[in-house]
Image (cartoon, rainbow, N blue to C red; front, side, top):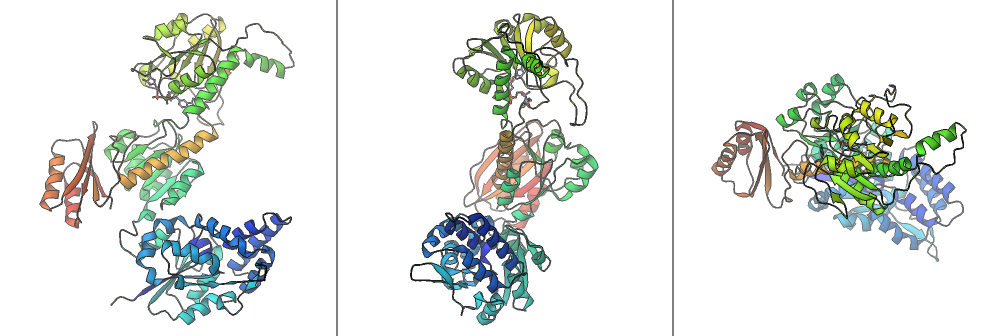
Length: 630
Ligand SMILES: NC(=O)c1ccc[n+]([C@@H]2O[C@H](COP(=O)([O-])OP(=O)(O)OC[C@H]3O[C@@H](n4cnc5c(N)ncnc54)[C@H](O)[C@@H]3O)[C@@H](O)[C@H]2O)c1
């Protein structure tokens, strides 16, 4: 018969993300004049106690003396701690429900705040072993129950001895005192829990380093529904992707590592071998050679707008879904365009550089308001449409032209040809995409169609404009001013010099492709892309995927979801359904979408499947990838 398993869990920085006494200090010392110094000292004392550098009782006494806390502060403390329960504990609530008979919280903290928190997740109150406070007649906390073994040095060990648990004992905690239980021979294994803090002297002693509760459950091969092995999904984020992305993916339980730079083809080919999700920005090239080594890769997050750096054909051929952030920096580009329009209408670029050279040129000549001027937007997509709204709000009269039929926003007027727009506009702003047909979309002929003294902006793609023609038209005065953020040839790094025949022209704003480069856009991207990847992994939804057919799927309930990705050939669905019917699997939902290369079929079935179904699904001819969600 299998031994009973007992799970001994620490509270501070393990069950919760924080140290409760530190939080109590923030509450009780809120108005105290020595607040900052005392909080710092509290933190130092906590750490020295946890790291084993200071005897526990001494650290506790000193901390309580510093706290100046009262009973009335405890309610607030509990409220704060409730929002700080470790995310992997919340995610695995089923574990606490199912094993509540064998879960114990053993802590040097205090029952007054531990019990209300842990019982929320289903831990039994009588399984909480911790200290209790002592108060004076006014409710001030003046100490602790000195008879409780947990208030003494080596308290956890003494407590475990007295509990005399029969069976296997596993200790999960972040501190030295948790390790001591194992060292005293009272536990089979000590798991150093690093989701919230990492203490090096503790890590060295651990049987396993456990970045989240998922890892612990996985190691213990607990019920599959409980320990969906998300921690086995390895994520590699390159190029200094915003920290929000790392946080979101870690919170989901994935095993995330980050790297601040880009990797070259050889390095990435090696690194990618056991990676399930790769996050890159524009500098990492995801080539066929790299992808040949990417046997576990299921999704790529392009934390940027463009996906030229990725061999999308090869990704789709291998069943790897690619997601980007198509409108996370839209607003940033639009704000820059608005700013430039105002600057150029006032001739500011020249006034500014004159001032830097010591020239005072106060004059209204050639300086205009934007109110009532006609703005012509070429390309009424995400950016064009957003610019339309903002421009109108500050008094511009908006005209637009797009190859596709687009809804006119606000009072904007649609033009039926590029020619019509160019003739009408005082300001022409390009927001077309980078398709190759758009090479030199604006050249000599188009400049000639524009009004004299027109303002011209290109914040879209460099190759869309014939630069030599722009230069001639600026020199002739036909174009009064221009804003250019993108160039046919751009330096690959900040170390390379910028060469362009436009350099030195008057009333010209040149910027180094930074239209979308703002902190806000980085945050948006860092939040958007992980959301798409998590949705794809959890539900199979491919909304916004660049290479996969887009399918928005309902959340799965009481069913198993089978995801089959295959080469787009006739007969595969019939084959899938055949396998399922032969194994008596009842289909409760089926969703299919194809593109030129692949077919994407999701089938929800209502009863447990066996290994044979999976084996047969994988061997259907034309299968690229098959995975089961639950
Ligand atoms: N400067 C930057 O830092 C920066 C940042 C983000 C995006 N961009 C660029 O801005 C451009 C627009 O981005 P978006 O998100 O709005 O793209 P989008 O795909 O939403 O919109 C592009 C629109 O242009 C239209 N179009 C394409 N060719 C056209 C043509 N020849 N004539 C008329 N309409 C045409 C399309 O039909 C589409 O509606 C892209 O080129 C993108 O690469 C630049």
